[in-house]
Image 1 (spheres, rainbow, N blue to C red):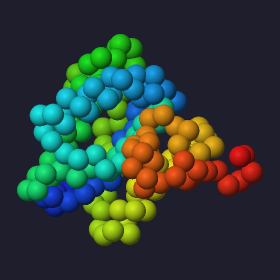
Image 2: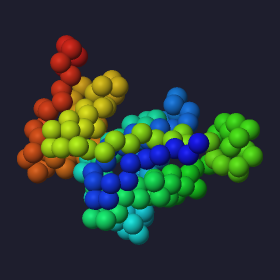
Image 3: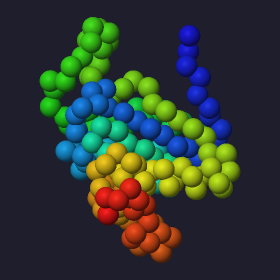
Image 4: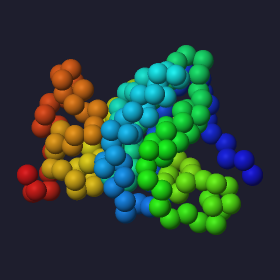
Length: 170
């Protein structure tokens, strides 16, 4: 059975993309490689990055492709491949991946959600930016270096204290 994805051209999408081995820290250990892969794909196949956060084992992003374009699957494939080419081999690969000649860095699938309205958009942007706090990496979202929250703070859309932990860790 073929997995069916939404493909509303010109829509805005939220994504979660995971490493296959969730205990690894490849994404933050090689964040410059990931940034270069995203930049290269974005240069050849434009899209707007509304929000982005890179954590050790997964990332979240919100993208808006150009009007009339919904091929985010190709963009993710190219980003994953571009990143993987620069990572030393040695990861665990199951028989299926070995048989297909695939690396074992990324989970094959990823989560996507088409943003429905302004409230949904705002909720997902907040989720992206708050994720490092949620996972216990920092006490305030602005303390995480691999996040588009810094762009929002510089624009005055969010304050530095936005997304501070409220469970007494401050």
